[in-house]
Image (cartoon, rainbow, N blue to C red; front, top):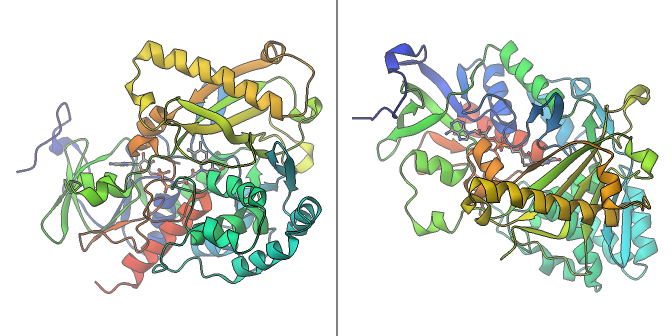
Length: 490
Ligand SMILES: Cc1cc2nc3c(=O)[nH]c(=O)nc-3n(C[C@H](O)[C@H](O)[C@H](O)COP(=O)(O)OP(=O)(O)OC[C@H]3O[C@@H](n4cnc5c(N)ncnc54)[C@H](O)[C@@H]3O)c2cc1C
């Protein structure tokens, strides 16, 4: 007999109790919404169940004291101008039947990879990045061009490709380890679930999406993207139920039979697409007690500080959109082993620095600083120590960023006087709002590329399937739904 979670209403009170769907989607993040749209377009009856009160998952938004904050979205990667054929963004929008203009994208101004002895600037014109590499690494430019040809021709989306070390492959193209580090810093920060090295397929996907394509952002941030997805899903008759988590998947050896919801009601479905994470999903089936799964839990997580200040950044001389920084010539990408945060490397984002239409811009300057965080320690702090730690690391990250941004000739205290509001999220926040174990942003290290689980009708999409970031998550939702719900005859 299934147990109703404590303090929940009786199943009889829920309108959902006893309903059957072609497909249930767990999670209203980018992957879940994209999956729902594909099902709606195919005339399937689906429901998206989301434990929280806002869509977007890892990439959402909130307000405090009347100030709006985006959680994610430094940049929508994979940007190409309207009408560009054959790119992931174009294909994705076609699959979702969402017009390009609905995303209201504005391109970045310019971004930077900032190491102490070298800086590489890039924008959405790849030839500019190539010229920067030629200027800074004249002995490596031939190898770089050969690497770019390999990347352009590589089948990065193969579901069966074995994992290959990017560091080993890069050594075949360059001699200078600094260039290797400088390419790994942005690609790992924007899409690696593994420490210090990444699967070459994933590197190819990230290199294309960051450098060969580019960065863009809607003026209103992630809200615009979520709204476009929600509106489309709703227009197709899809149901989205918020504050309605899946507490349990009740299954036999082969199939998921029922879903028990947080409110105690039970529903059934022919198929389930879960975007909650791989281990997280198997835990819902009470099937997570094996060593392979234990070894496949993500440990890479971040903190991010968000500071709203009075001026537009360009008036302070800060004209870059994103800065990927590292404080030595060797880039290490690993969870800090003792400190709560590792400020030696990170990402600085100034969302004001996009070419928004009609010279409009965000009301305030926004400075966001992302850095790697300890996997477990944030979860062990009591509330007072937690708040103190946030304040401590906010100050350190602010100092780090001010030392990298063009000098203001003013102290941190003076810059603080320009501040209107600030916030900071930690792995604990990520866990609270998405349920991802350890608050791991990029999920498990070994991806479930075919999306299959031990159950015939339960599939994984999103971060743990293997395509990362906003565009990646949507592509994952689309491709897993096409493969398992729309093409499959089961
Ligand atoms: C701070 C930050 C900045 C980022 N910046 C960028 C960026 O600039 N560009 C970019 O491309 N990507 C960025 N990303 C990454 C991007 O946000 C993610 O890769 C992508 O959004 C993942 O989408 P998803 O649908 O796979 O998973 P998620 O967003 O994690 O969605 C899963 C959803 O499932 C819900 N859920 C979990 N368990 C249950 C349950 N039992 N029942 C019901 N619902 C459940 C969760 O609440 C969540 O809403 C950023 C991420 C973060 C955290």
